[in-house]
Length: 354
Image 1: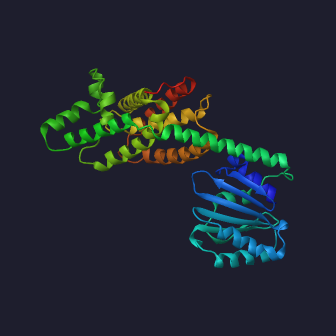
Image 2 (image 1 turned 30 degrees about the vertical axis):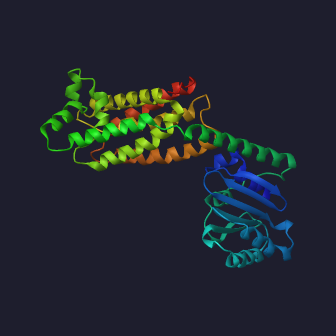
Image 3 (image 1 turned 180 degrees about the vertical axis):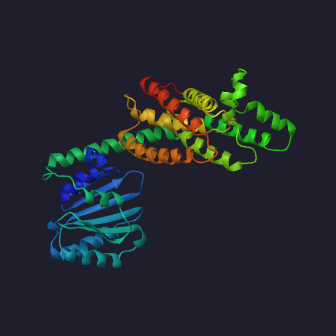
């Protein structure tokens, strides 16, 4: 049972297919296995009941819980009968920092039961679909540990290489959007005329006023600060992540192409005036998908797996929002497709940071 849990939690092939975050196998010393989830502050100590004498189970649990200092600690005992549940409950009452603990018992049939404290969804998912595996050899364990160590190291190097690059272009675009909102949202006649000159207008495009395909993305609905703030938060979140990775030139090209594609789709398919950075923001979402699916590996495996799950949720929510009234879904979809296709090219050609 213990070995099946180890594979289900820490083997990237098994855990990835099961749809939960892969744990890094930090240590494997009979009867204890230690896991951590990088960047989440969560750790799991898995104890093999078969390797612990009856009189030692309580003291072993006390030592593990007493060593906890920060983050979320989960302790699970694999195997054993109802006496294990009683020992876990007793250890929980003696533990400090109980708000940061979660205790589980996995019986011999593979049923995962939370005894006390917080939930660990990854463990509960593994319990619902335990992989078939034989006993792990020393070589098997070393391979899993080494793979996890290498993936953690790659992820940390990636984070270090991008964390200290200030997103100058992203912040500049946000500043322009705020400035134009202030200028155009008042009652001044010149502000209203500027708004009409820069918005995405099918009639204007038919007059070859092609600048509108970019400038509309820098405008936002007059007297509607919520529209501006939501788009700017999304733009900063995605732009500050992609700009250090792609460089300013490529991010600028991505913004322009996505905005233009979204504006063109809107003008062709809605015949209505539109404003907002949503098309460009969708382009950044699509670009992240493109970088993840390109042949050249851009992201470390650990970060790529987490990104895929996050993007699926974010995209599903945004697709649902796109079908709400007064939302320009064609601008969204046009920008997203353009960003995805452009990122496929980026993934094949090395970036030159600027």
